[in-house]
Every structure is written in C-alpha cells, then in structure tokens.
Amino acid sequence: MGDRVDQGLHLSVLVAHCDRSVIEHNGKRITLFPETVKSLVHAARLSGLRIEVFVADWSGVPQIAPLREWFKAAVADIPHVVVPMAGPFNKGKAINLLTKLANTDRLFFLDCDMIVPAEVLTRGVAYLAAGKAWFPGYQAWSEGGKLSLPTTPRHGTGNAFLLRSQLEAYGGWRSKETWGQFDRPLSDWAMAKGLSAEDLNTRQPVPGFQHIWHPRKHGWNGQGAKP
Image (cartoon, rainbow, N blue to C red):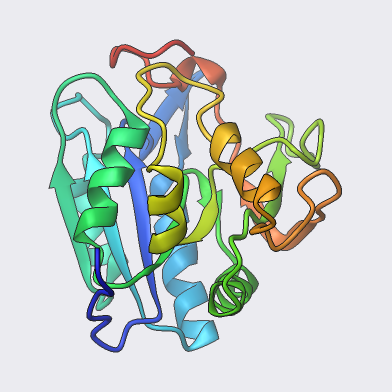
C-alpha cells in the first residue's frame, strides 16, 4: 500500500472492543473502556497531538454500557469511527481491518482497559518518526488497589506503536479467536529485526501508563475465546 493522506493527523489509535466498557463483579461496577477513552482524550490535549480513533466493536453482545450510549460524547471532537463486528471475537482480524481504514501510516494499537498518559503519545510518535516500533511498558492495578509491574518486563506487548510498513512487512496481526499469546510473535519479530525502540526484556513502565484491574473471567467469554 502507498502512503496514506494524514489529514493533518499525527496518529491513528486502533482499538478492538467487546464487553469491556462496564462490567459487574461482586456487586460492584468496574469501568474500563470509558476510562481509557477519557485518558486518551486528555493525553491528546496535553500533548498537542492530533489523533483519530477507530474502534472495532462487537456491538451485538449484551452489555451494561454499549458504545452507542456513551462513546460519541466521550471522544468529544476527536475524529472517530466505530466499526460494528460480528461472529467470534478475533482481535487480530479486527485491528487488521482498522489498519486498512486508518488515515495515517502511524498506528497506535491500544487495549481497551488502559489509562493513557500524554507521555505515551509523545514518545510513541517520536519513535515512529525515527522508524522504530514501540511497545510501551506499563503497570497494572490489582483488585486490592496495589499498583505493580507485570511478572516479567517481556509481558504484554499488545499496546504497540507501529508504522504501517512495519506491520505489512510482518504480515499483519495474528488472527486468533482465543485469548492470550496474541502479541508476542509480532514483538519478537520486531526485536529480531532491530526495529524495537527498547529491549523488551529490560523495558521500564511509562509513568501513568496503567492497566485497569478486571477479573479474568471477563475475558472474551461467549465470543469463542477462553478466559
């Protein structure tokens, strides 16, 4: 594919979403994707970067807070597109589709249960400008409210900044209908090719880049995936 017209945009943010807006656990409601969007909008404003947001949404799944009820207002004046999906959840299929629709060649693949600080956007755009892929490190909240590092620095590379040409050279994200081990093959490839901005075995978290806690049973249940 040729270069995309970027329409003055710095970055395309691409998200696969299925039943990750608001969930119930032990009588309490846990807000996920709305918090991600709120932080992303704030980060874009703080950084001064112009972004667009594309969401692949399994809208047919019964949800406490469907995207149609809150997403448009939450994303405010940022250009955005929601693509309805059907059939079994398949994150790779979804974000490969969004990649084709994106208006820039600078891509940020974002999980829908993260808090995004401005530093993630500014560093990501800078790394892409230098021709590097970046898999930003993060911290994770526990159910008890403790913030900690993943069990290994190598864990969790689904949040990724990639140039379109890099993703095409790899062959696109892995098409997979089960949960887990989705991201590792691509980040391994980027490391082997010398494209990764950091050594993923020693990377440090970006301050404020955080995974919101949710019970594992709220994986992609009912969509062909295993928790």
